[in-house]
Image (tube, rainbow, N blue to C red; front, side, top):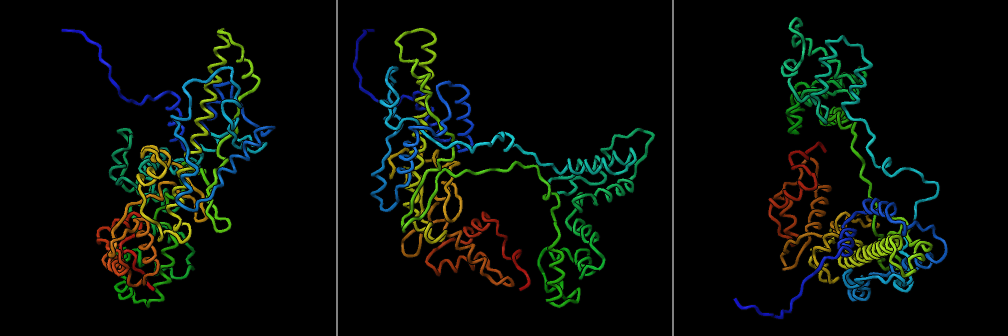
Length: 492
């Protein structure tokens, strides 16, 4: 086989470590970014927290000025175009070049925590609540039980689910007991221990069905409570009719007027059919907005949340030591840390510029939402924003995931503003979010005695020019946790 030399011209994308870092920072949430910043501070001696002294104040002012650019016309978005990370970050950083010569903005500045705030981050975000089982075991230790009854009580508590209901039958609990061959336990004894557990806090826990749960709570009330006998009768004898909201049949069987039944229902509805939900050890999820959207003098402004991450800067004392042109191990160590610190600050700055750019585009496209609410939401997909800001859809996906926008109408994830579209009768498009808002509005204004069916809602939407199938209405309704019409029915 003859050997030859050929010249080929081609293009390929090289994912440098610096570009990988920029992409990884872009997809982090604000809280995750705080942890990442702390990790970098612990590992890189060239980075330090900026306490807001000296030159960085000018940097903050410049950052705030650029962050407060108004969203007015579609052409404005192109004026503040941000160059991609691959184009703005050089391949090599000169060691002897000062930080000010390389980057005009100097240190990337972000606000630090308030003085005296010594609370540990992990302590603030760790789940410290007591679980339902722990709460029941604590009461078990305070209640006098014989060793056998304590064994039964432990088996009962183990069988309680998160809603507070008993997840096993008494026979199964009896079979699970590990007792000696000389010890006999019958169902009556298990039933007796169960009754004691059911009066633990929260009352009604370990009930076997909703009716038993409600009965236990009703029997704990003061005997002089108005309408208590009628409520007991309703739960004991007519719970199926109550579940089906067949109020006419209930009034007929209990011989109550509509006003009297309303009083009985008010008492029953004051109870908790899921007692276990009162006690949870779930860790609270904190949301820190990445940008603020405010309206000033009739213009919608997008501002970066500078309180989201600590202020960082290059340690000038350590950086000055690198300017000696030698190849010693110590100098190479400092040089590598300086270069990593500069890349990190540049990646951090690029992350926030990209966030701001995408947020401005979203506010520009969804201005009607900020003015009039959900019903004015327009259809928007990732591709629309990607084309407007000249980025890839995958980049937009990273930017809009776990990033939040604080607006006068509440805090929303960036992804909230993206939705599919449904065709209208005049050939236009209507956002799925807007349709959900209309459904919610129609249900809120319906006659509670005659709630709207999915077919009726579809008909009302068709009258407004929006053609939506009944099954689509059902899907949207279920996504908003709105029960069907037969479960929404109540006395007027």
